[in-house]
Length: 367
Image 1 (cartoon, rainbow, N blue to C red):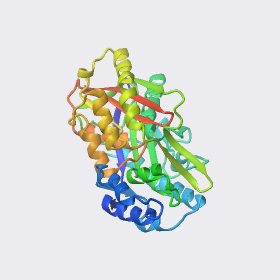
Image 2: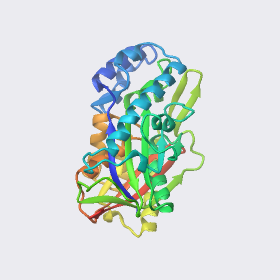
Image 3: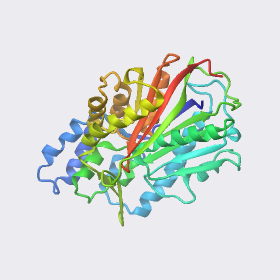
Image 4: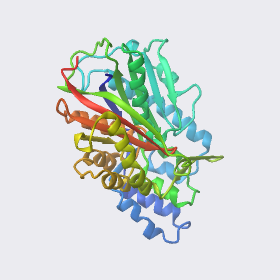
């Protein structure tokens, strides 16, 4: 089965403590929300300590056009994307020798926080020595579910082409979608959660010949199966409204309730198809979303805080970075070196409303 061999993350240059963000938002929105003091509790109770952005905090004090934001999205996505790809293929925590760019058969590029045609993958390929025949598979619009969905599509590609080596590159620059004049509560909630992040994963098929040297880990996760699920008539749960001023967040207050009521039967269906039970799952590689989303996971699936410890830590240190977030969780999980034979669910929820799940199993002596 396809194997996840390496994961890299790229941290944007400006780290802002949540208390700093709260002060900025309080000043910007105090005229729009008469009960601003009470609403600021979302910053204190969100279990986020800091977030990383491509712009300094002063950037948020002035208005920016959609053109200015999107130009910044393209330039910074290329810069950070090049760095993430290089880190994934160079010797790192996972392998001892570089994987040549020319050996990559396909790039699955996941992003939903800006627009680019040609897409970002083409621009990044022009900065690095990829083969001109590398297949480009850009995916837009999956939001927070995009990281897990990208990994699922890489799994399917490697099943069809067992000799393949595929990169999944997730780039989200949520900070530059900030809307100073959007006085909806959903915008305030989004402002308390979302951040910038970039991550890249290398997935290889059974017959792939690697030049990566030895794996530094005793076991690596194989992907054994996936499940995609769409909740009918749920477009208003999560997404973007595209307006003249840019992307305005759609963020329903009902998301935790939706997760509690919908996720468990969805997970049970997936496990049943895989011949698994809840107690067979050792690792929960989940996109954390936010504090209430994590609590909904725990309530719905009966998981302890120990099962959600890594997603919770990633959220605390980075905020919700949309699609790359689940790859940050995957990287931290892999670096804990799970024992051979242990199993996990990789999952993320996003616009649609939709769910993407992968069954992973750590296999020893992966060559």
